[in-house]
Length: 190
Image (tube, rainbow, N blue to C red):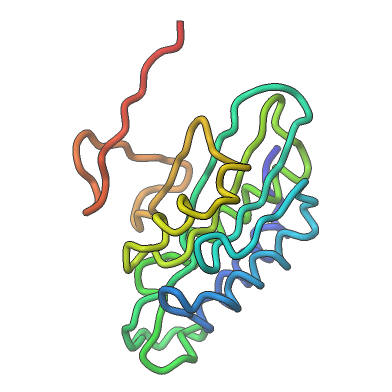
């Protein structure tokens, strides 16, 4: 399953909409509402809102036994004035998506589109739109939320965009990549 040209057009327009209306950590109420609205057409089997603040988890269930795999992105922006001059620049003084979280959210929404068309073969996929990544309290709040036990993953993945990498390529690096990274170990299943 791949995204169509129309999907790319719509996802790009939606990311730019998010970019124009940034909300900083612990204020992501409208952004969370945007995510829920955008994913509605993908038919998630369950949507949890208000996780650890304004977090959103969309669950796509195969209906068959298997692992729960969680993919995470962030909702929050930074308290920084945007001076880019692009047509979709922030319209909120002193706040902007300068760390790419609007792009990460759009990438996860793209995965939601694909899961809406073709459920996982087994288990569940959870798309976790985390609040307050920039302050460090968002992940702790999500995990501490009693409802998180309903979606506790067997595997969890996150991503970060890397401008300049050719389309279709992924980069892996050993050791620490971002300030809070603990790395990743990939092993061959036997």
